[in-house]
Amino acid sequence: MARIKDMTTGSPARLILLFSLPVIAGNLLQQVYSLVDSLIVGRQEGVAALSAINSSGWLDWAVISLAMGLAQGFAIEIAQRFGAGDGQGLKRAAGQSVLLSVGVVLLLEALAQGLLPFFLRALKTPEETFALTLLYLRIIFGGLPLVMAANVCGGFLRAVGNSKTPMIAIVASTLINILLDYLFVVGFRWSVAGAAAATVTAQAVNALICLLAVLRLPIFHLEREHLQLQLPVCRRLFSLGIPVAAGNLVISIGGLVLQRVVNGYGFLFMAGYNTASRFQGLIENAGASLGAGVATFAGQNQGAGKNDRVREGVRKSALVGIALALAVMAVVLAFSRPMLSLFIQDDPAVAQQVLENGSRFLHIMGLGLPFLYLLFVYRSALQGIGDTLIPMISGVVELIMRVGSVLLLPLFLGEQGVYIAEIMAWFGAMVLLIWGYYYRMRRISPSDKRAL
Image (cartoon, rainbow, N blue to C red; front, side, top):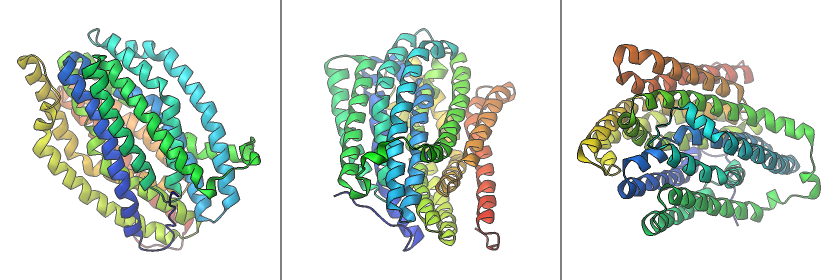
């Protein structure tokens, strides 16, 4: 039977770290199979096919992050009901989450497939990669219902303290993805379509394992009444999920503007930048996973009324986040060039220029990791205590900082200004989130003036 974990008692730091470690491992493997797509396609098919996959990142994220954001918001309510010991409330929230997820994913699927060519044109996607990127994203978006199912079920499990089963699901899906990458791309020579098909199949495995684990937990055994539309519960779930999804969307808009500017610098600059961007998920993994632990911990303890434990857990998590950021930064600065060289197989002159552009971006990105890791900690803490508005506003700040930087800095710094835009976005959002966290915690308990 899948395990659950009450995080309202025991050492906050130990609980958060023990919860986060499987998430780190799972996310690391998830990034690995994303990189495997690029590695196999880049070495097998060349820079054009590699760029087709890598340049799809922000548009892919713009759609998928909406589903992920809603699922994350739904999980906040599950965590709080679990922390409060409200079994019936938890089941009502779970049932309505399922209903809302079905409706949302059908709408997203229709919009994504219908508007995809328009957005690729608007992003100035180079003609060398347009058809390949379109094909890749058509298949990836076809797997959107599987992404939603995996995130909803995984969110349910993490909300009740089980981070191990989602990790197991990712391990299994990663192995399937790698095997199918070799079969579809190397064996069948399906190029980017094979990479996309392998990814969608892996998502199906992830969703199935998480679903079976949820069904084995008595706490999620739903009756017919829990699956009948209940508007007050839906409003509460949407009040938590929509700001998270909207924040993700706003961040994505900034990323799409950034991608358009990058595409305007030409094929070689785009190829280097986007290849380096493929590593972004990998280097931010530890911070994002720590944030997942903070969100569950804060949600359960806020539901139980233990706000002092929330403060202690967030304070210690911020220190851990800084230490992790510095460690990852050292690795990035030392090994960025060798890592990128694994993915680039083409004419030597082309490969050298792509490698130079990508390594410069990774170096600058590495220097900004402390900002990003603190962003994860404080955004997750706010979401865990039920405040998804300030994190949504932080997405607007990211948009303003990213777009403003990418439009203005190149006027003074040239291409270097494009690289710096990402760090500026992280810094602006981090400042707002730290302020927002202190503000919210003072409102929850005005008499407690301890430094957090």
